Length: 496
Image 1 (tube, rainbow, N blue to C red):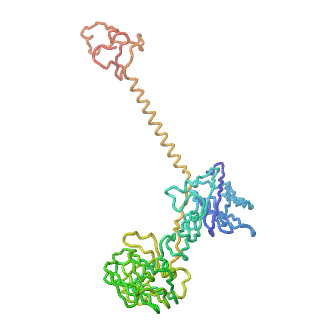
Image 2 (image 1 turned 30 degrees about the vertical axis):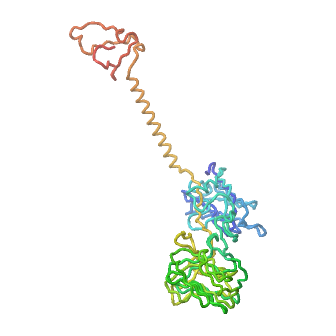
Image 3 (image 1 turned 90 degrees about the vertical axis):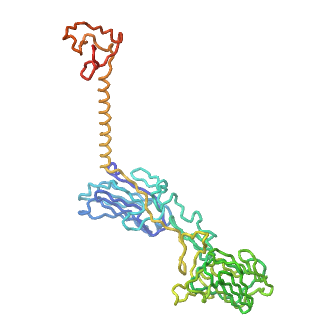
């Protein structure tokens, strides 16, 4: 990068955020630049590498008074160029901003990118960029940003430029708002909760805390299931009151005694034999038109005497002041005909006829929105242990942008030295191999007869042995023989 004494960078961006650091670089010679964007301005702050004698420079492009905002979620093009003593900045088709050094050391300097180029942050505490970046070109080389975004080392990045609501993460038709990296599901008008409004909205009751709902009348006029009293609960306590209804025409309560259901309606008291405090969820249905009580879909009690079709001046209470400070249970899907009591209590804009009570003298007494689960279901990853609950928001991961790396000159020199050493080792190996081959067997046909000397290696000539030697006797014509490293025969006896 920075070849031919120039560095050119261009990229497209779009965002809905108020601002952030789009691009930054810090070199090895105190040279740096930081590119930031906001709703009204694009700013380039830089130094060519001599901060002790030359102050930082800055180029700023402002949105025209009638122009579009830079955070209008539409694409904008930024071009940056660094030349010796010159820097330029341009956004879209707005006039180019240019700064020229007239004297000083920086007139002969320019930004040559020899360190990491940080996309989306400057990693020193300034606000990072949340949005989308495309067509990043550095010195006429385009980077494959979608490929960089899906690398395992990158966090908080994803390929593509659709916002986080594009795939409809919010369940049950709940509204979604968001940007490129985060989303928010608004569960406040639904019967669901959780990050994506996928869990039924429940309530946890600790100690003597309770929810109270008052109504002038509650009608159960038909035999449809929606006109029943229904709820689901889970607890591990043996003695606890889950619900009471005190109306002008009827009294009803649902409790546990010794872990067994104790159901009271008017003057009748019914205690069932099976225990339901084993930490599992149980579904309860009270059918007013039939005077029936069903547990987990099985009708266990019916009385025609205790039928009713309306509750007049009713006070419906979930939880009770008589519960022990150490008791706790969770309820969800609580409905009286068309009235969903927990939705009325936990949704935004709670009405005056709904009250949440916590005993101030008991620090453990409280009621809060929660997701009811039992010992057979795994707890969800998040819930809100206080009331009122914050709005469910999708996770926003920290942005660690892809880094465009260049090779340090020292690394290049080290690679060259290693290559030279390898070549030297290979050359030495070939030379040694050639010499060893040169001292091995030779073909007698390749030897000039005029250069043949005959040696008597056992010195028998000293004893008067003057017998000659016939070369042809060595393996016949063209026979082979061996010489040692000094050119002498390698075996005892007469050799040529």
